[in-house]
Length: 451
Figure 1 (cartoon, rainbow, N blue to C red):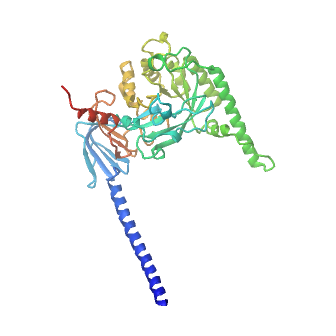
Figure 2 (figure 1 turned 90 degrees about the vertical axis):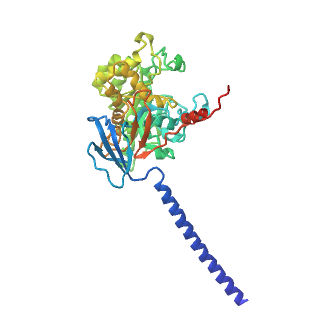
Figure 3 (figure 1 turned 135 degrees about the vertical axis):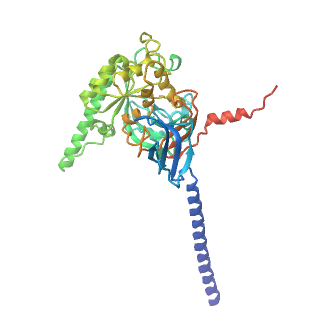
């Protein structure tokens, strides 16, 4: 029996040793596979060299034939006479134009899949006052619209919630990533506030889909003023109670808590504001409350362009696929609006205001060019200007040394409908341009023609 116990114990020890050796072996194997996979996941090699491209940096002069060196996701060198590192993977770009990737300044990418199917629409929260809502929480990172937009040169987008008076917080995302968190560039970008539309508005597809305002702009701004005042008092009571232990802390107020970054000037407010009189009212409100502001929509901004310029408030242009809010403004009022604002000195940026039409962002800019906007300014309005408006121009929006290598290689003018996007890099990684459209194209190419 003793011999049997010794043998059994020895067998157990041997089994444990064998298990440990096997585990270590598998660990080494999986580590090797993981490292090999990391080398071929699109992020490697660490150094890329795009050569012989015509470079349009957006800021500064164009380079007729130059080189862009990419290291660790950023632009390490850019210019005409640039030395190519020996370890670099060379990408021949002769005949192609290098642009900074475009930024959609207002969209519902990842929030709306099929607008007619309510189960796929997640851009609206219940209630009217929702400063705590963050668009990133509802972002569908595998939305089919994201690769479609990306394939047309859009590398980043503002994803914004809608509905109510305070809709929530928008987020700036890059159009690449395995999870919604991985896509984040700036999580809390702006607080979204929706003011009433112009009464009798004809906006929306074929004039439908827009409802009459239920409250006036006066009442909406008065309600906001009260909410901001309440948030300031809430913070004052909290600070007083923290200094004096004999005083109780105020009852938890979620709305006031999430409005504190706004009243402290840390978080801008993006006002959806439309008519000229409403724009003027909102300018006065912003100045009185001493908050940071961005205007979105501004369909009648051309009527008060000088006032907007004096206030120093940048404007995000709404969809140019809409109809004029009032026929009296003229059929072309939406198209001439960006040019007038730009000439007045207002910083503008274009938006798709959509998910399925985000791919059309460059064509909104092109429409404005056809109605008077300078072409170079139009290109800036989809690249560097939105980056400046949202405070990320230090890392994106133009092709400059040190910035993230989010680059588009195209065979022609980026704003032209017929231009083909050959390659897109997001933070130095070449991204796949296949999408639902290309899948359908290949499918129907293979279809047998029946006589």
